[in-house]
Length: 404
Image (cartoon, rainbow, N blue to C red):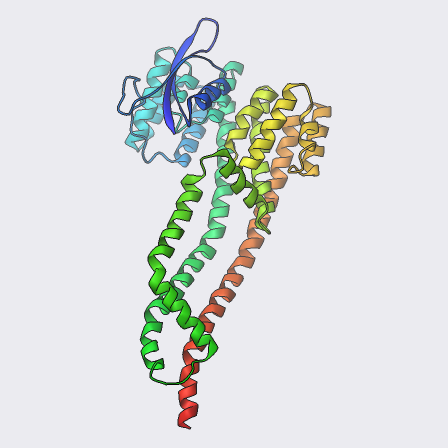
């Protein structure tokens, strides 16, 4: 990802200057358009360039949770009638983290200079994504910034709770799997070689389970550097290597077709899209622009591609429900609800209902999977460990039988 400095027209007579982070210049232009600006000039920022005041700040340690708390506190202050400059001053004094205090200070300077609050936010795209900025701008235009900020805080709270639930649910099975795997590898690479010296003196053919364990142990000891590199390379590829659209599409399709997990991944993404789109529409943002802003927040490239195609058809005048209905990836339930919402003129409310239902189903699926994974992991690790122990004891039993 690169950082681009741009100048853009906010209105007929106003030119703004800010930064945007994107993978390419084309993507940067698209993001600027999503924020409602018309780009006039754009250029990549060279490393070390601090010509754009405030953008060279150290943003390390500023978590998503801190941004959510800031948003909630800011909305409460504005609702209480505190002017925006005073509210920023209060938050500046209350902030305990120096890096975030510097960010608030820069935003305070921008507002004091007569710039819109959303312009100050756009200078820190790593902290405030296009969705956040678009909602704030809509709140500024409607004169209901405090209400918009509260809705943003509630939205971020719900998203963080969903991610926290999934992380918490998967932590124990993953930890158990890592510890179990490490124990088995230790037994095969450290314990077994010492027992081999004893087994080699028997002078008889070893039982089949013992031979299998010996072969596995030899393979691990001889090839462990390559196996470690292969696992490391796979992790790095999954996290950083899926750069091309084809690779992201392949990975996204694989996730959606996983047994049991695929449906959970799909509903989680659709819940996020529905909630985001409903929030944008409820804030007064037009449907086309709301779709354009909502799509980048999704992680699955297959769903993103389908929504991009739907966007093109909606742009031509077709209804959202009709365009989604032509794509098999979207459930009929979701399409029917959106269709009802379009007919009644309450799309944002039906999208909220879709989000609530899919979030509840995702939460339930996570709980069921957790309850299944824990005993399943115990059974698998117990079975593998038991097989290794039996394979090590069988030659001892042979020796005992020979003595008797």
